[in-house]
Length: 145
View 1 (cartoon, rainbow, N blue to C red):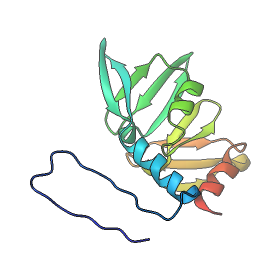
View 2 (cartoon, helix red, strand yellow; view 1 turned 90 degrees about the vertical axis):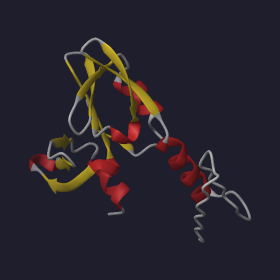
View 3 (cartoon, one colour; view 1 turned 45 degrees about the vertical axis):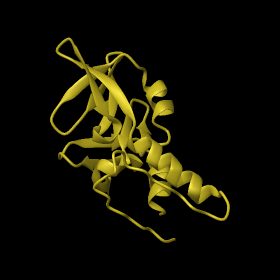
């Protein structure tokens, strides 16, 4: 694969052009990642609605029938259910790690096995999310293990 970047001062909008002999699964994966990069999602904090970049969200979880987004420094509530967010973010780096949590895999700093076949995921901000043993094979698959 050849990657070429051109800087033009007169460019008003960034363009990405893919030139290939045929569309295959790797091209489709690149396309999905590019589309996910610019995905926005709404979160509520202090009675105000904020427009967030999906790539800035570390993880999403549910508690007391409410769903929350966690960024590096803030917590936002969302009216969406976890399964709805999972569908919306399926082309992004988000993966299900438990019955009540999705993790932005691009924001995981480290992984460590935990008791009972579970896995501890330490996020960029130092918070720990526990992956249940049911989802550990998905995480290992993502890592190619």
